[in-house]
Image (cartoon, rainbow, N blue to C red):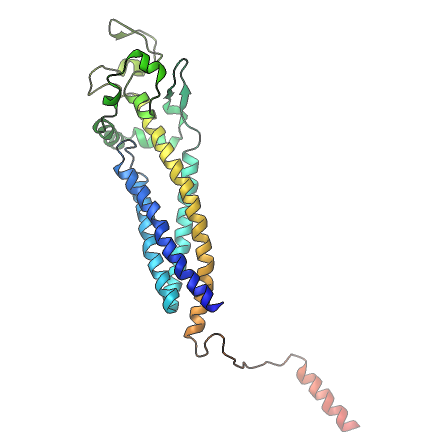
Length: 283
């Protein structure tokens, strides 16, 4: 059992190194993706990924070379890591629940409403510094240029991404006369402009489209985090056994050797011995 626990934790830490790759990759994917333009998850995911990487190295050294202090540090950091990943996953599911998709009659694509998303996401996307960076990212991705050649028939038969639906066209309900929006319409109808550098980038529907893309990406990463979390809990349990074995290996008597320990008599032993001596004296 001694060799099994330490060998197992050594191999599991190698697997943990592999498990950290999807976390780091997910953070880099969010950072480099020109469609999401959202960096709120990039930093925590990258930090978690690199912490898993370093902690796995500590656990590998402690398990393979019976270094008790390295395993103790490994288990302590793993405990905080599991708690952090659990909190991030729960928060991710909380803020990405539901969605703002609205069916459009006669269309394959959906449109999105900003007020259908969680308050935290709305506050995040409406802050000028975050929205300015997100809008620059959407414009730089040339997402709208991909549907610029579309005909009216294409809009009836083809699907649109959330960003294309919200940023590259006015809401379907808008009605224009001589190039101007008629009265009593959605405010986004008045924000729309045919200029390629304007379009509907200032519309609430564009913010909602960005949030929908972020919500989808975040939900996928939250599901991945659940799998990683279950894996880390299993490794932590085996690591506790390896830590106990490492402490035994560092003691004066290695695990598995026969040794004697001092036996403490029961509380009634002396009374029994006194009664036996008195009986022998009388008889």
